Length: 342
Image 1: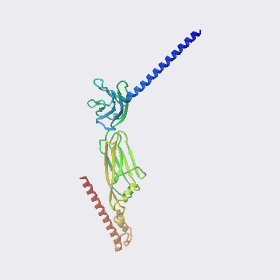
Image 2 (image 1 turned 45 degrees about the vertical axis):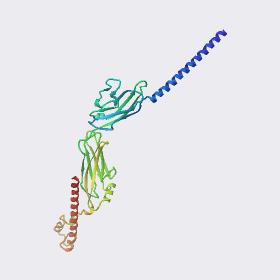
Image 3 (image 1 turned 90 degrees about the vertical axis):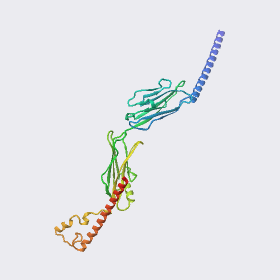
Image 4 (image 1 turned 135 degrees about the vertical axis):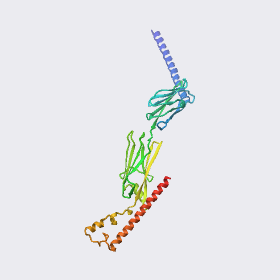
C-alpha cells in the first residue's frame, strides 16, 4: 500500500507540471498573437476615414459625394454608400464589374462619374435631404471596417423675386410706417432680414417684426417702425435739415446658396415745413364767419384792414416757400433715382 500511494502521488505531481507547462505555452502564444495583431493593425490598417457631402444642393442639380481614407499596406475590400440606412452603391475591386448600384427611391447614380472614392448622383430631389453614410472595409486578414456619415440638404429655390410694399412713401419724424416683404415658395423656407439705411433691424417694442411661412406657400414678413424706435431716432438726429429719405430693404437668404433683396425709399419731412391750411385762411372759414355776422375788422378773420392783411400775407409767403422747397427736394430725389437707375 505505501508503494501504491507513493506512485500515485508521483503521477499527480507529473501531471501538474505538464498542466503548468501547457498553460505557460498557451499564455505565451496568446501574448504573441495579440502583440502581432496590434502590430499589424498599426502598420497595415484602415486609417483617417473622412466623408465629404455637400451641405446644400439646388434641386435638379448633380451632387458628388466622396469618401477619403488611407490603407497603407492593407488591401481594399469594399466601399459601400447608404442613404438613411439603405445601400445604394457598392464598389468591390475583386468583383467584375467592381461597381454595383441598388434601387433606392429618388437616387440615380451616374456610373461614369463614380468609383472607389466618390459617387455622383444625378438630378437630386427634395426627398434626398437626409443622412448619407460611407462604409469602408479592408481585405483579409483583419477585415477592419469603419463608417462615417454627413447630412445633405436639397434646396428648392423660389421662382419669383422678392417684393416689398409700403403703406406710406412720405412721413414726418413723428409718423410710424409699415413695410411688407414677400418671397415665393421655397424649401426650406427663406430667411427675411430687415435693414433701414444699412442698419439691421431687430425685434423690439418699437420695431415690430412678424414672420410667417407654411410649406407650399410664399414666405411673408412685415416690419412696423414706430417713431420712438432707437434706430429711427439715431437716423433723424444725423439727418440734414428739411427733407431727406430712408432706404428700407428686406434681404432674402436660403442657407449659403441664395441671396436676393428688395428695397424702397421713404421721403421724410421735418415738422417745421408742415403748415395747416386753416392757418392760411384758405379753407373758407372767413366767408363762413362773414355770413354769420362776425365783424370784419378782426386780424384773425383776415378783415379788410392793414393789420388783418399782414399776418395772412406773411403766412402765405411762408407756405409758398415751404411748398417750393418741398417740390425742389422731390424733384432732386426723382432725378437721383433716375440717374441711379441708368
